[in-house]
Length: 259
Image (cartoon, rainbow, N blue to C red; front, side):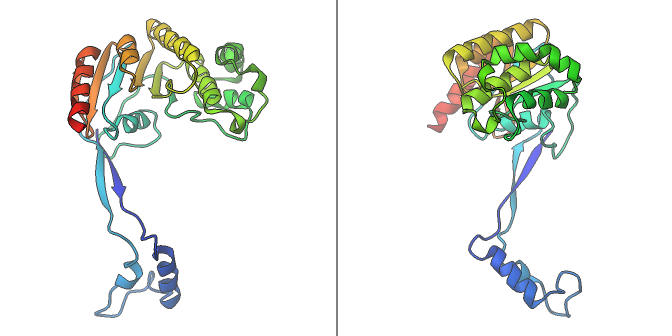
């Protein structure tokens, strides 16, 4: 599996201005052929050439049921891109993925929350996105609220929540609505220490119940404690797939080379 992104942009000095100016001067340029010997250079001259970058390249990865996989690597290695593909936020450019089970994800703080909706409303919306019925969500509702600790603010739009409050509620929704596969991207770094500890204990509990967890983190101590296995990504490729302690050793050596 591979993922490529285009890089490059419109010239910000004259981009839109030049486009509109050329469009007024030659309104039929886009729909009629040019006269012999002419070209469209003055319509496109305000744009910079677009190149591309491979965020992920030729990944071949299998995660077993009930496995807790740590994903580590330097910034820009492709960790978040991998989780976004697995969460179906974006598609691979080449190759394919197969997912067997309901996926819950926390890719950013408050991912999936509508800022204008209250905490209560967002719980039901996220449950519906996971494919749960309203009665199933109701059965889990009290557990979600209790775990999050935001009871007093349930009727408040989440746009007024702090980042820590959004993280608490989002994590609580993700873990309490019983996904078979849980994707977590560096979100437990937000919030107070007591909640982080509680969240880590919950992840251990979920792994013992046979849930599959993919966990991106720069906290090596937490990753080594929680994960059965870890991969190291560097420049979009897997350079290590091993026990967490061995993967962490390689990751630290890569970081040292970059300093």
